[in-house]
Amino acid sequence: MLEFPDISSGYAFCRNPLRVCNDAPASGSSILQYNVKVGGVAVFAGHFLPPLNTDLSDVAEGCISYYPEADETSGEVWIPVLSKTDMENRYCMSVETATGDDGKDANASTKVILVPGGVSRRNWRRLRALGHDPFSHRFLNPAANFFLSARTGSWRFTLKETELAPLYFIMAEQGKVRIKELLTGKDYVDTLSAGVWALSIGNLRKKIWDDDNRLPSAFDVYRLDSENNWVYACNIGVQSAPANRDRTLVKFRNSLGVFDFIDLPGVLKKSQISDNGDSQNSIFDESINGFVSHRGRVPLKIEFSIETTPLSAAVIKCLADMVVSDEVYLIKDQALPVKVIPSIEDFSYAIRADSPQPLSLKFEAVDEYANITPDITTGTECSRRGVFSDEFSDEFY
Image (cartoon, rainbow, N blue to C red; front, top):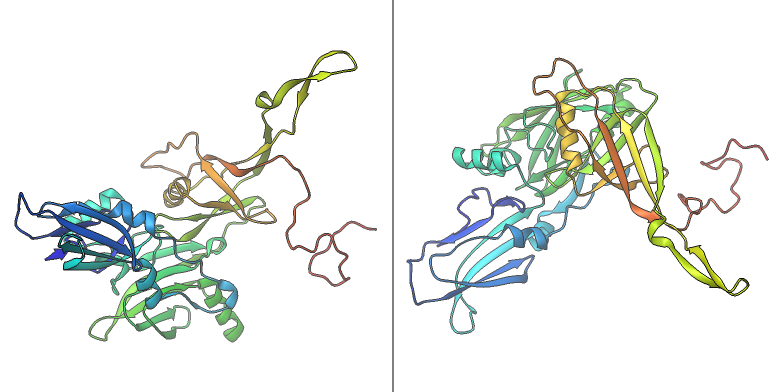
């Protein structure tokens, strides 16, 4: 029997251990082959002496991409991201052992649906001790906070109005999801097909505002369980962002593989740094019959820095997830999102803080600029626009 012994739900994060084993008796002479496919494409093959016990997480991480980004411009509350067919075609890993001289005679097989991202090593150990994997414990559990967000592991989910991002989740099978707006007790029930979905709290609030002229800030989420009973999943609360003249919104891919936002109050500064050292040389000047110094165009490296206002412990944890992220963008006060690499020089803070504390962050733009030209945002900047165009300048001509 071939199986993933640590996976009970049929779903697995690609950045956590993905151990595959079989129960074949130990043999010193019979060498078998195992073949790995991801999305139906053969990606790896190996040989082993039974029993098989190997980790395929590196193979999994290198063969799948992140989920597509949910498009909130559609105005839909429930945004389809991937169908179940797409998940099976693109994110399904199958492993089979084979016999025969050519290794093509299938002996046993198993499969798992891969999900980009992963949980911490500490949580992985704890879940194994509890007899769960991350999905049977939380992300496919109708009675738990099933959203792919690393902001909290609790049933209570709190967001600022400035940090509203689509909340991704996985539906293993078709089922119903109910959202209860707590101000009036009104329910919003939808039947969702199997696949990956995203809940847009921003679109839901806009829908309620358009229909009832109310702007709700608290919701309860329910799911149908296997016995067709409604079970409580989590609470979503939307907080008003404190008034602040200077704030920066950062978009980043969280540890669970989807985009999240963090609002950083504070003055954002921009620095443009050039390095002349490697660009200087000497060229021959015929007019003086000698060498003179010369320099080609010097690329500029752009850095952003911000001294945040005091942050709470919960925000600092979210900030840590942003700092280690592999995809980060500054999207506030920029014409277009700027991809950056974040860093914190001193990320020390009191474990039991008596009060919120500030932190200093730096964001280094991934691009260097040797050609400095005006930014192109809409593509119509170089053309004369009408009087009632969406974009205009305060400058008088």
